[in-house]
Image (cartoon, rainbow, N blue to C red):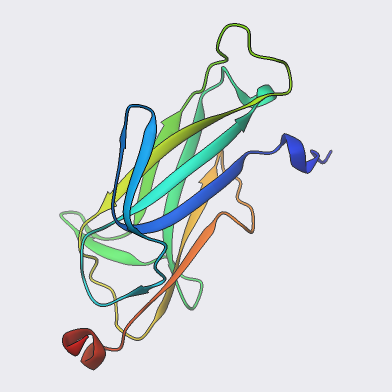
Length: 152
């Protein structure tokens, strides 16, 4: 059974130098870039529009960093090399008086330290919600070649 597009979760994802949520609003500085100069801290800003039928339920999300060959990027951890994955969960309730068929936004900021990733390469952050993903739940970026990163 397929769900109609208007009933699926809609996601907006932005790469930013800095992002934070305060007073129910997302504040983004240096947002919308697609090329990284080198290892630097940054943020992935997410806004998820949750449709009526998906409210009042627990949802799991995972952000995975994928390299240009379609492989998970691994990073050193105390337990050895592991895939870079960020996990979380959310539940959006329906406010009193909400009209059936409405959707409700929820926002997240994932702050990332400088990643040990190669220069001159392409990457993507891939979002999965409840084990499923969609084509537009991807955030593509590239890294400058090493020489450019040091001069630029």
